[in-house]
Structure formats: structure tokens, C-alpha cells
Image 1: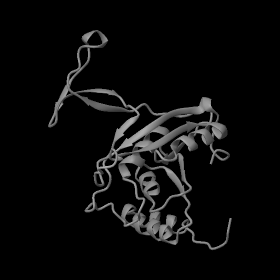
Image 2: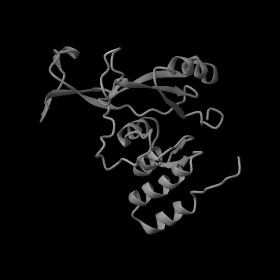
Image 3: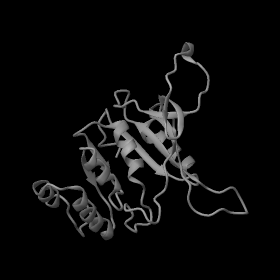
Image 4: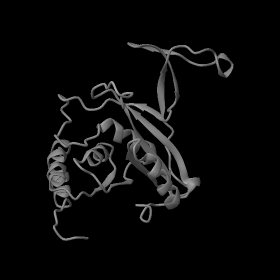
Length: 210
């Protein structure tokens, strides 16, 4: 991935706390530790509690770039509650159904729910991620018509998110089921018959090693 990445490109690696420290060292060697930008903590509420340790409710996403020319779209989020004036007391507050909030730069702590068992997004793929997570990553580090590559695309969440955001995309996976899910999920996303035929002709299945 690093070899084919454009100088303006970014690399996001998802893992959990059992491996994040090993993978951070590996990526420092491959990408250069100066090109490490963030460790994003993806928090969620799911699974059962345990009486032998603290419940595990987050994963890690390591964010690297290839050069100082990397592309990044500044993103904001709502911060609820009035926390004082700041900036000379010129913070602007808004109100919605959850209360009073200000708009702040997005932090590296993301609370995005896991998919509920009844979610229409669910495909039955065991490691499926929510579209909201991939959409946030794609919005941050690309613009329309840029290319998004997922070399372990699984049930095609990255492909679907990229399609929705009008990016070009490449997805690769060793699983036959992944190939089938790419076809099924994109049929739901692409309404134009011409576009549907176009990507049908570009999604390939092969048993030959690359």
C-alpha cells in the first residue's frame, strides 16, 4: 500500500489494542515516524460486560501519510455543554434536540455505534464495520473522484462508502463471500443502469494468485 500511495495520500490501519503497539512500530519503519499523524480511538457500545477485567469497548485506527504534501479536509463536530467563553468569549452556541453545543475541530476520539443486530446495513459478515466510520475517514483524506483502495475489503463497506461519496475505489479480498457481497451491496447503491453495468464489468473473480 505504501509503495503505490500517492505523495498526497493517506493510510489508515484498523486494529485492536492487542496488536496496535506492534503495528505502530511496523508502520513507523515503513512510513517513517515523522509521517504518523494520529491514533484514532473508535469507541462503541456493544457486547457483554465482564467480571474479570474492564469491558473492551474501543478499537484503534492508525493514521499515516506518505509525505508532507498529504491531503486533509478539516472536519468539525458538535461539542455539547457550555464550557466557558474561550477565544475572548466569542464562542458561538447553537441548540438542537440534545441541548446546547458549539462547533469544534474533530478530535481523535470517535464515538460511532457498532451495527445493531437489526441494522439494514448488516450482511452477516463477521468483521463488518459501520458505513459512518468509513465515510468519515474517506471524507477526511480525499475529495470527489480520488481513488480509495481497501486491500481487505470484506463485505465491501469501504467500496459502498466510496461509491456514496463519489470516489473511485478498488477493493480486494481473498474471500469468495466478499466478492459476492460487493456485487449485492453495490446493486442497492447504484440506481443508474449504465453505471451498474460499468462496475459489474469491473468486479472480477479469479482463482489465480496475483
